[in-house]
Each structure stands twice: as C-alpha cells, then as structure tokens.
Amino acid sequence: MSLTEKHLLVVDDNTINIELILDLLDEYGFENVHGINDPREVIAHCQQHLPDLLLLDIRMPHLDGYAVIEELRKHFAEQMPPIIVLTAQIDDTTRQRALAMGVRDFITKPFKQDEVLQRIRNTLDVEHRYQMRDKQADHLELIIAKRTQELDRQSRTDPITQLPNRRGLDQALQAASLQASGTGLLFIALDRLDDIVRLHGYRIADKLLYFISQQLRQKLDADCLLGLWGGSEMLVITPTANQDKLLQLADRILECFEHDQALDDLLLPVSARIGISGEEGYFDTERLVHMAALALPPQETRFVQCYTPALEEKQRHQLHLQQAIRGATQRGEMSLAFQPKISLTDHKILGAEALLRWQHPEFGLISPGEFIPLAEASGDILLIGDWVIDEAMRHINEWRALELLNNDFHIAINVAARQLTRKDFAQQLLARLAEQQIPERFLALEVTESGLMSDMNHARQQLSQLADMNIAVAIDDFGTGHSSLAYIKTLPFSTLKIDRAFVMDLETSAIDRQLAHTITQLAHSVGCDVVAEGIENSAQAAYLSSIGCEAAQGYFYARPLPAEAFVTWCTEWKPLSSTLHLETVNGP
Image 1 (cartoon, rainbow, N blue to C red):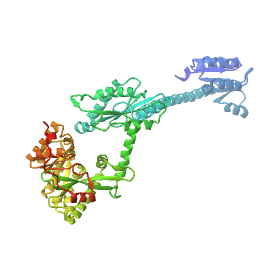
Image 2 (image 1 turned 135 degrees about the horizontal axis):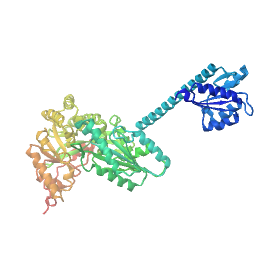
Image 3 (image 1 turned 90 degrees about the horizontal axis):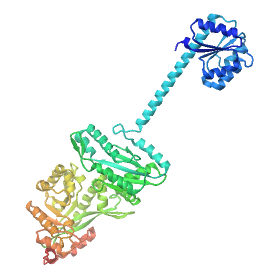
Image 4 (image 1 turned 90 degrees about the vertical axis):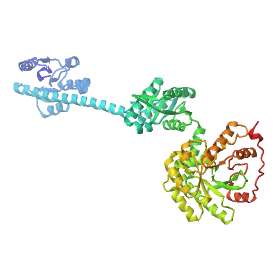
C-alpha cells in the first residue's frame, strides 16, 4: 500500500483547520482522509475504521487532545494509531507531556503546507517501516514456531520407521501414568536383524524394520501406541493392564513372524520375543519398562512371558551370582569334587572326572548348571578354568606321591568353549604339565558338543596339539547337542561319553537301549572307547557292559567326592562281582 492510500483522520474543533488540511492532502493525492470536529466521536470512528495516522488538536472543548489520547490508549492499547499533534502552543511543557503520551510529531498553527506535508509523510513512512518490521517479526516468529514444532516432532520420531522413538514413548508413558487408568506394555525384541545387516546391509535392514512396523500397526487397536525403543526393540503401550488381553495382543503380534518377511525379492527370517508388564494405576514409567524388559524371554526358549516378582528375583539372583563369581577361586569358595570312572570289564578304577563346586558364604552350595553358564557369558570361566587345571595338577602330584595312581589312571577336567578359543591354550597347558613334571597321560580333557561347535576349526587345532602329546580328549554329553558325524570324523578325540539322558531309562525304554548301542558302535567304528554317565544301578551297568561300553561313572559307584574322601574311597574300593543280572534291562 502506498502512502497516499493510507487512512488519515483529522480531529480539530475548528472546521476551517480541518478543511485546510483536507484540501492540502487531497491536492497531493491522499485518497482516504476524514475530518471530525467533535473529539467525542473519535473513538467510535476508530472502532469502525482505525486510521493509519491521527492529526489531533490539543485544545478542544468537551475533550482535549490529551484526553482523546488516553481514551485511544484505553481502547486500542498497542494498536493505537500514531498521532501528530496540531497546536499553536509549542512550549516545553506541552511538548514533554505530548511526547510522554506517545505522540510522534507536532504541526504548529498556522499551518505551513510544505512542513505539514513533510511531517505527515515522515510519520507515515516511519510507521510503515514499523509495520513492515512487525510483520516480518511475526512471520519469522511463525516460521520459528513451526520449525520448533517440527524439530520437537523429529526429536520424538524415529526417522526410519516414523514411529515414536524412546523420547516420544517416554512422553506417552508419562501421560498414561498421570491418567492412572491402567497401562500395559509389550516389550518386543526382534531377533536376527544383525544377521540381515551382515548379509544384506543397512539399507535392506532399514526397509525391513519399516516393513515390520507397518505390519505391527495393522495388528494393533487404534488406542495402542507402537514405538521404537532401541535398534531392534519395539514397545507397545496399551490402555489396559489386563494380562489376558495383553497375552492375546502378543499372540496377534507374533502372527507377523510366523513366516519369513517378504521384502522385494528376498525372504528374510526374523523372529520376535515379547515381555509383558502392566499397572492398574499410577506407575513409574522407567520401572514399568524395566519390568517388561525383565520379562523378555531368553532366546530359543519361549516367545512370550509376563513379568512376575519371582522372575525378577531370579534374575537379580543371577546378577548377584555373576558379580560374586568374580574372585571366588581366590577367596577359597571353589573346590574340586572327583567322581570315579570304573572299568565295566574288571571294575578297576580308571580315573576320575574333576567336577567344579562352589560353596558361597551367603548363597550356599550353587549348582554348576547355574553358575557355569554365567561364568562363560562373563568371561570369568577363563580364570576359573586356569584354577581348575592348577588344582587338578596339584592333586595329581599329591596322589602320585602317595602311589595312588597307576599308569592307567587319569584325571579328566572339563574345558569350556571360551578356553578353546584361546590361541595358546594347548601350548600353555603342555608347558604347565612340563613345569609340574606330570606325564601327559595323567590328564584328560572333556569338551561338550556345543563348545566344539562354537569354533570348530580353532577347537580342532588346539585339540590336535594336545592329542599329539597323548592327552586324551573326550566328547561330553554326546547326542544332546549339535551332533555331527563330520566332527566325529575329523576331531582328534579318543572317548565318547554317553549322556545320562540315554542311561536313566535303559531298563524301560527300548529306544534308549538302541541309542546307547548305536553310540557305542559308532565310537568303536572310529577307534574310540565309550564312557557312560549317570549309572544308578547294576542293571544299567550290566547292559552297558554287554554292548561293549568300556567304562562308567555314576551314583551306583560313588557320588562326586571331595579330594580326601575320594582318596579314602579309592583305598576301600573292591571290584564288584562281574556277574550282573541283565533281565530287567534286556526285557522280554
């Protein structure tokens, strides 16, 4: 809008002055000019048409210019139009009072046309600049507000899936907590995404994550919120804490993973596990998520699990054990127990398996099945394994000095997968035997199938070095892990151990008898002998002897014994009768 299009209002009780200014402005092209000679009409006029500039006389009847300014400020505040005062008095008092009330300029009477016009133009120009600045400021403020809103949205949104991220989920959880009307959480862990990244790259993995998120959204009700908690972890917030409903929802979600994910030309295998938690009223958001994460089932167990205090207590106990296991050997809490191995031919003692025992001062006797996996996961098994080797060698030296060991006797120690991954394991073991001056035949190793399969090539290298030095190697728990005829063909082992799972039901199960027989024949076919574990009665021992199994160990002979008790047992051992009853085993 040009200056001549601006709306000007002249207020003066002298109509001649009004006419003079209106004529002047009209002569110079101002098209929107009005005059009022009664100051009481100013407010009503401004309410209908707010002028861009007000030319205001100071001395008027009814209301003087100062009173008009006060009324304008009262009605329009910051929207009050700029004012030029028309006055014949230009004394300092008048000037200071008017300026203090926000007047922009003064025009003195009698009017000088050029001065009037210039002052009007100057004021309009300045006011126009102010208006442009304010508009620009408002526009910039709007842009900043929109940008801030967008940045806030982005800060709460995962860029790949466009789902709420952890920050967005936290805000939603806080809002749900304040409502205190019941909230349930499904903590979803997507498995095998790392494999897809390695095989196909991040681009495919990102597309897959988006694809899965779209599928999951279709499975959820409108009042459920799906978000991305971590790289491969999702969270569903539901407005119910009812466990049955949460389990039903989890089942619907798992339907998305019943088949491989069809993405482009690929079929990508992804599985999911879900941990569930819920609270009926107000809850601590971090705690509720933690409960759902605690309920997440371990891999390869189940798919869905609900949080319970007992579950958390179990996991806390495992954490305490994992912390306590560090340094347990130095504190003297661990010891070795020895279970004798007996020849099924002449019932002589062939050796013993050294079994690790942990007696904790607070938790008591802890099962190896409980603490060994924890030690393997944390890496503490390496130090514990070294301690076991040292202890076994110490006992070998003591028993040799007591002349308890003949040339056929050996102590077998269990070796974990983490130990076999050490490149110098075999070298260090042989060096320690040499340092202790212990012939290699007195020490044997037992490794599990799962331990071998974790790094077959490296295990083969380490075991070959030991076998070359006449250290016997036994495959423990054969048939219960990832059994493979390939490793039986290539690995340098001398003994297969039949797991107790195939022994315990020999008397009643024809299948177990056949499996035990097959394992024995398989071992003999590759030049190995066989040791059976878990013998509990003479009938089991008799059947195993009849199929050619060379040795056995189990409670039928002796429980795992502390070192001193084992020595006593060895001195008191008398070979059993070689005539054993077979009827209950062989059956009709």
